[in-house]
Length: 91
Image (cartoon, rainbow, N blue to C red; front, top):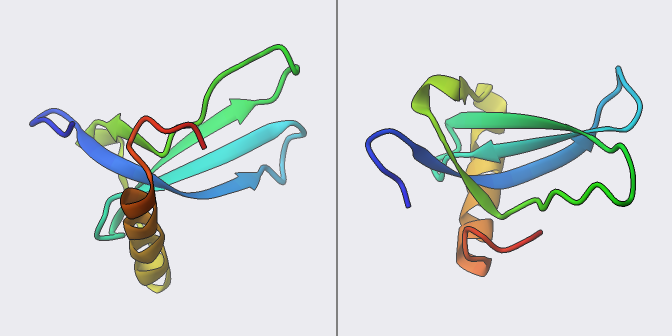
C-alpha cells in the first residue's frame, strides 16, 4: 500500500555486484519506470533467509532517477511484475 510517506516500487532487476563477492543488487522501479530504489544484500550463508518480494515500499527521498534509455525497460518490467504478482509475493 502506497502512502503519502512511501511509494510502491516493483522488482525489475537482480544482479550480482562486480565489486564485491556474494553481494546481490535488487533494483525496484516505480510503475512509470522513471524512479528506482536499490537494495544490496550480502549472501552470507544458506541459513540466512531474507525473502525478496515482488514489491517494496520506499521513501520518495530514497528514489533515484532512472537513465532515460532504461525508463521503458523498467516500466515494462514493473508493469509485468504488478500484473503477475501480489506485492508481498516472494520472488
